[in-house]
Length: 269
Image 1 (tube, rainbow, N blue to C red):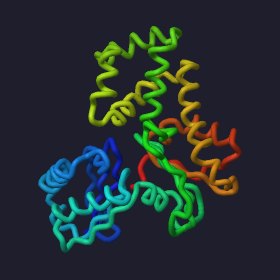
Image 2: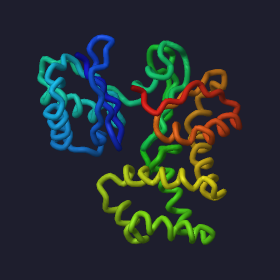
Image 3: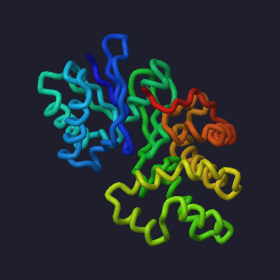
Image 4: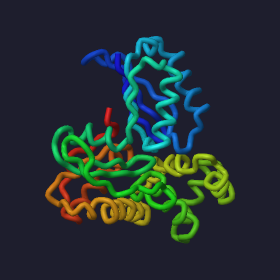
């Protein structure tokens, strides 16, 4: 049986497949090897195996995840071999490859991820031929849940017109400004916390200020990540929770830039 994984910074979706039959689906916490130690990765993997008996019959693992390039990918591969055994075939690739296979298949197109993080690539039907660097949520990741959270928090505490919304936010999350700062600057995974604010943002799209923040975030993604490919003839397809839940805003922005949307999926699996 083959174990397939769609790995993000917030969560990993796992699917166990026996030929064309899907045996089991489950979810674990995020396992971005850039941010998570080998010990923690192995702990999560061992828990996965112990809780799902069929995992003992895995003959191959394909893990496509955020941060899985170069040295971090080798780190993830070591962990998978330690837990599933050296005889198991293991393939580790970036999440954008998994996304491209899911939304483009063997056709040419632009594949994108808008989840906790953001990424994109120009896909020729077999491999990536060009890629705008994502650079992570501090230096880039425009369009992502983490950047959306960052923009929202900035407006919440700096725009006096959002005072009532700020008070509602602080009540719901049992937090104040110092608590927000602590979550961002002392939390080992601040990108995950910032992205977790998306459901609150989504519930308040009736505020023009909040709606503009969402549009600003998605517009920045197109301007800095999609337009540089110079291929307005190709469909742009997406996976990820941000793309899925903000589909209306995404389609409006794409139309503004003269780009055609291919498909939008919550998960590549």
